[in-house]
Length: 503
Length: 95
Image 1 (cartoon, rainbow over the protein chains, first blue to last red):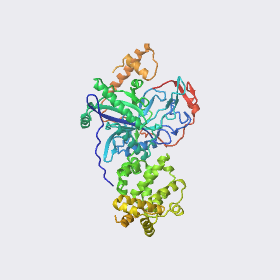
Image 2: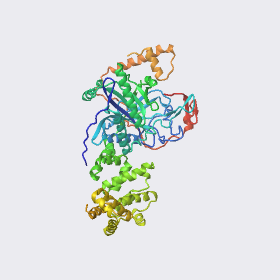
Image 3: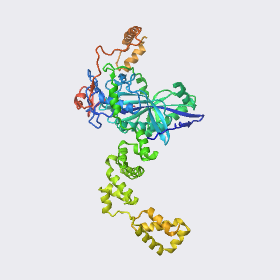
Image 4: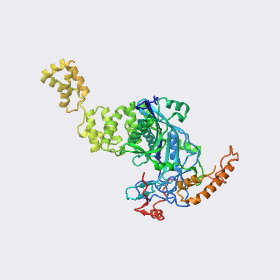
């Protein structure tokens, strides 16, 4: 395996009217646990159901109903923790976070403030080949999701659906190690990739299954290093929290806007007020969520309905033993085993299914050529038609067969592309299709030579021109390829042209 | 620590419990009494003693990840003061 070492990226610097400023960003990612039923009830997590049909009495907070924890959700949190190289806490506990909101029927969210199930970990966030930020994870805790309010169905009423209420979330809290909007987006993308590899969260941001709260502050150059040396937040600026974003693009835009807003306040001699803000994508700005301010008094206390969650090391070990290969390791292996470039390895490991497809095609074949065909032809075509790899009309076996025909010299690269097109639209066995369509490279140099000799004899003027300017020899190659119906190997023809013309 | 009338009013509001202004002094007094008792308990040195969560050794009960509940929309909405088209209908709350 390759040992990939990385350099830390430079922090983003924003030039204010008076001085330069740097950004300091910490994130809380809410990732919905992939599970069949909810964290504390047997109701389904399926989306798109009739409103309030995936609701048990526990979720609706009917008096006397008690929560019973879903063991699989616990395993999913442990698996996520292991994927982030984090400490697993064999003893964790649940607390109540109290606040009033119509989409929270209990009047509190069951969460893990004091004793989270997962402790410190880390995520390597690559920004360019050889450049990556190591973001420290502070903790992951399990908690309940809230319901959904719909405000546009009636002028005076809000409509509430509890289908999502009580679905398990993992809140993944980072340290303030992220230093710019692009890094923040790359961090979310990397976390999403890891969780999808692990199968612990489907990462669907559009559905809100992965969303981010972003803490942003600004400081003068040099202050952040003092914070890192002492871990004393006093060296950093006052932060604001931008809530609930589910788009990488909005995350970047919101951070950029928020940093500039804070810089303007500070340069004007003002003070940043610590508060919760909301990003408005239509206006491209953040605004204060004043109504949330008083609700911030959460009056946490241990949840009396739930005993502490104690898990055994052997159980954790079993989960560790069943971990899949993670993106960083897979990338390093692809670069080492198949000789792929950094870029190609990133593209091929972005999604687990695509990586598996490539690996099956590349096994026993030239890895670089396989990578080219998978990325340029297959992915290119899939993207164009908005298809996923699972929906690919061309199978591993078909693409592999095509590559074998290329490798043995039976078909040219040009024929390969035509063959790919046929396999995509009509299907079939590559070797049979190639034979049926007369796709066969002319390897008989006698035939090529004859075509070239005829051409030279018939075009003395072109010969003279080519002898003066070697670039014009390409004309002969083109004509020979035409004469042989594109079945000759261009490299072979080129070589012969050069020899015959004495170039 | 003692609870003054303003704190009692705030706590009542956070819990969405309507308390008459006249009742606040008595409520503040009662809450202060409870906290006073807690403070007395806090005098006991419990260094190194693990908090007891149960008098008998018990393990947190677990559930398998299977759908065993739900599809009781009518029953869930039965006690709602207002429900329409399968939703709970509440006075408009919008951020």
